[in-house]
View 1 (cartoon, rainbow, N blue to C red):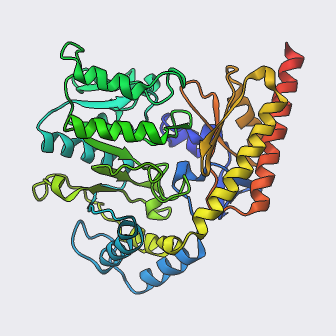
View 2 (view 1 turned 30 degrees about the vertical axis):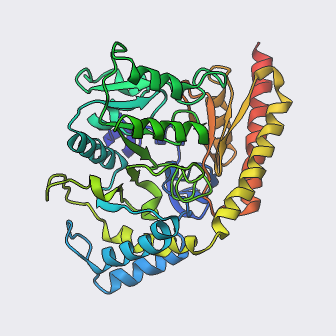
Length: 420
């Protein structure tokens, strides 16, 4: 029995899917204690958009620590925070004509979601929230209440959460406009759906199965929020920070959310989360939502280095180019197994291969790991292979990883045929 099996809680999960003791990593590669090399198509569940140990981050952190830079500061003002806010304003907000206040919460995405929900209810003086099918927003009590998957919800009492779930874009297929359905439910005084404080959504549902909302749908949802005086919260925790190609996942749509939640890669691989709030909605009382580790100074230092990627369109163009390579290759795989009704979906460098056959996606993921590729599954039945490589992955490693996927699908299919 390993020390992990002996002492670590049964709640651990990724160590079961990827059974190795990892020792070091660089960009898109991980190495185990035994020296085995793995290509990373998981990227810390979207926390490592800029890769493992970017050299500019390592250098900045070492220099900061050698200067005895502040580590823990609660929400006091520090040089690192000042420089991060200046960089974020200059490179992200101002070029996009966005005006937001920045709230630093405890360093998990779930904590930031909790803050967004609390603030929405305070601003609108209503308790209700509308979320969507296949949503995933975290596993603390409030975040869990707006998460759809019953695997996480079943053991917890959420009856008093005041959350209603509506169908996400394309939930019933392309012929059904679920935004119109939502509008009708809000218009009808007998629908049983009260006007909520906020609607919370992901422009791309990552854990939900790589479901991409259309531009039209997102714009309709924002118009509904305007018409019914509802706040729009966009969860950009996993699919922000360039994952879709643009910095924010919703930039292709003509929307400006009232609240945007960010975490994961905003800290450059270090714990950090924040909530972007339109100034008129920043109605917190001082100290009303606190946390000891809100505003991680090391994460500020890391993020300052990485925000430089957004001085020009170089990273965005690279993501779009690599995205096309991935889409074409996945479509080629799907075309080889038409009887399995595979479907390619995604945007930027979050791509999915839906394989409806029960358990097949898990088999492919397990097979791929044996061949040196880390890739997870998503969707309500784990039926979607989710590709989430670092945005900075080298072309040759991207192709090598895609080769492993194709080989793993082939081996899993042939084994299934033999056992049939």
